Image (tube, rainbow, N blue to C red; front, side, top):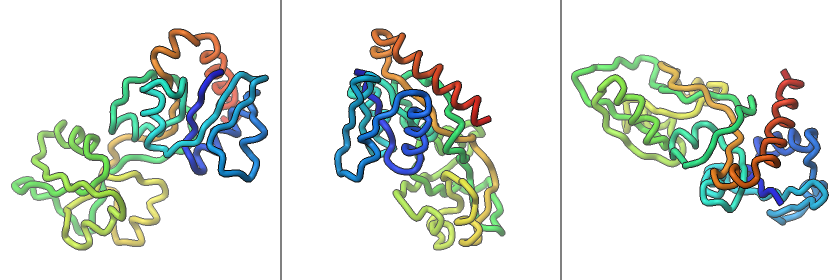
Length: 209
């Protein structure tokens, strides 16, 4: 059995549809149930739903052979896994945003609110900018409005939430999309099975293009 960790939510459903089209379907996964683990012995796959930010942990520690994680998670946590394929879905970007009238006074320490601490640190370290990181877990957009921070570092998809809160993107850090990742030991011992799935999914991506 190949153990596959899928992120809960719309992204995971999209990825499962790709896998189903590629010949790795598991009909029971579409049943209205609270089950989290689904098997198809015929195809040799076992799927399980996990929180998106936990996929890389399951894969890194070998509970899953492969999984799907956003590039943001891979950059933030640097799990010891192989990144096999850009699935070309779940596209967005990691960006710096601020109030429309923001001016970056280089003489002052820049207050940065984010839940992506490592990405923010690496980004500003590259330009030797002195920053004060404020770790938040949600509603990042209100931090500059209330004066908690000067800027935010966050994922931006459409930019609608920023616009509605009178914020704007001032810099794009990196494009983000969903990636197929593999446990290193699994890739060594289940190379053929994993590469078969990679090639099947690559074909699905090409069709979508």
